Image (cartoon, rainbow, N blue to C red; front, side, top):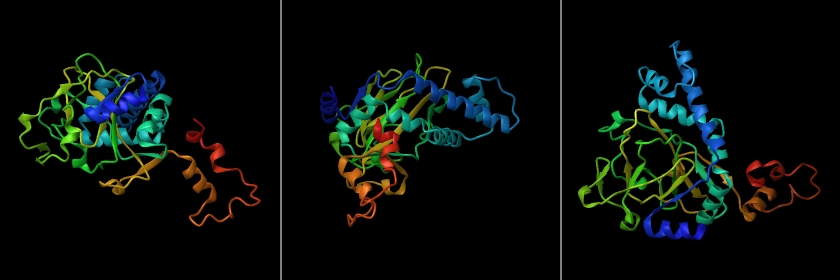
Length: 279
């Protein structure tokens, strides 16, 4: 199955990994988001009803710009280690390793994506066809897109199948030139599933016809030994998994491979208590 998905990624530029995230983690993500919105409203002394995401969100929008809300909610998900726990889900982690190898890190600067009906016409919040490479991702990056609260009519993304083979596409004002020549396919993605994309795959936001805002998390993943072909060096990445060689290098502690950490050492190994290594 993992090799089939790699072939789909090579052929089509994307694939969907189904049922790879537990309900518990999805519920935790939504709870963290709802609680943070309530905390901000409380700080601003604005009345709200507990566990009423839609109305509380629109109240928050009246006092904060949409982009700042997305950044704040994205930050809290990272601070609470929700993103890390999500990426450590066995099926998802194993699929990432099968594509990129065991030495994996993920970007921590992504905001939460919130899509509403009103976003149409705003090229920051309702994105037209684009490639992630336009925004600084490199060819070595894999983008995963994780929906958190999909309901009927919310939509997901539209993809141009095989567009990753076009290479870098000429663009202007955040959309491809000759955009009408590209045929898109609407993706059928369910909650607890994850979309995998290359940095060259053309994709865009699908219209949300539901009154409730759609929430999704985009995360850039890469092998930290691969050459950086984009602007990844300008962003913050956190290590997720290590190969034997990387673990061995960390145990030795320096590039000269001296024995200062190993010969007669009594201190506990840093990897014996490393959660992400044990999983």
